[in-house]
Length: 143
Image (cartoon, rainbow, N blue to C red; front, side, top):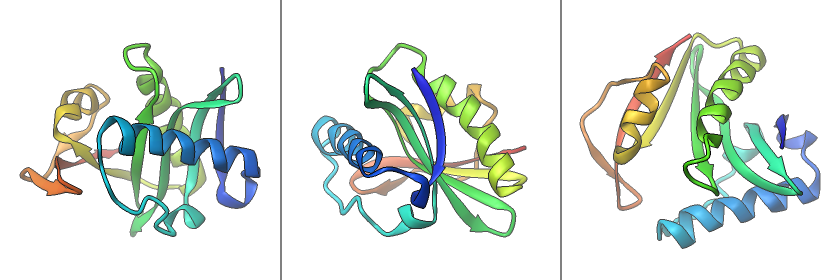
């Protein structure tokens, strides 16, 4: 399994295809979230992922949000319970800090994943709300 952190212009056509395929597999097929996934934010994002046998198995994107805050989104693992998510977040947050020089990371977590992010040092900073029909909370971590 190989780790990558690339800007959009650094991604190959195959990598973009595999990223979008994994995002559709999780958000559309597994979680039944119906939204326009290609929202133009990808162009200005750092794409952080693990690839195994040509397949993107864990992924998130990060982009400048406000001041020295970066937002992480589209977090996924295609195989659950194997520790890919924790590895992705730990290694990925280092790359995000290095790339953006940020001091805070913000994310909109699905409510069921709140405990996972808390173990990584994130704190809940909002009430629950619906986003794309799924219960979410906003979380942040100071680096």
